[in-house]
Length: 329
Image (tube, rainbow, N blue to C red):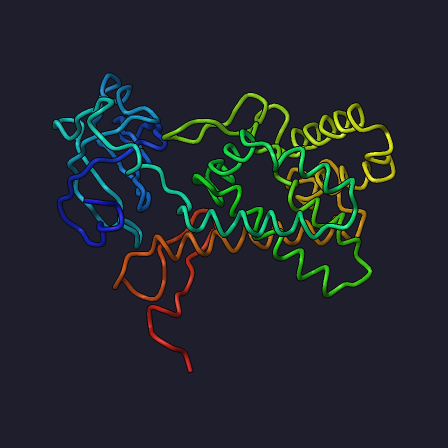
């Protein structure tokens, strides 16, 4: 049974990936485990009561389980429950499952369309320095392969294979509209910043079945990592083509867009936007990230289960679905 098929209370069985596991102790002093498990179709919480430490250690992140449990309603949302006193799971060894079943991601046809957005945008830039910088990254096969499969985040939005490309293409599309609406905008600067704004995520995440944060990502953060990658690329271009190939006057504004695109200091930006282009990039990035949360909540909503989704931790609320009640007048 896939996660998307768990739509009502009752017994369930299936093969799932452990996405997170935590050891807890209830008020009565008895231990239990809270797990987040999933497959390509979605995620669900699993509570295991009366579990021993030995059993819990087997349920670590990245493990694939053959599971038998019960789906129960808790505070308006379904969760799975099992007893640690029973043999409710079996560890699947490599070769006993298809990794593709646990790798949600963007389809091949969708990836092709996203690359068309990226490459068409690059080709339309007028300034040769920006075109040269983008070619340094996007015309390298190894880079394109990494960018093609990279996630856009660990959990909150675009947290799947191809998520980084999907997010980047959408931010670029939003910025193109903004550049048309505000003719005083430096279009080449804005679109170059949009294409490169999350570059550092390539160094921030790793893992196949489970997305993990790297040491660099945790200690430095993807904004600073991205700025470093762009700075190194600019230096390489100057070393090969001469200082005039990427004028110094172009470097600082682009760095500013990358470092300020989270918008607020409390959101992880070391500096707030001080250019109109940086302001527009920040709001395009934030807009797509928020829209992705709503889209994910819609996709994970069980069919025939009402107008409202269960409480969504990323959005900190439930959302209403027009499609669930037909066309609104």
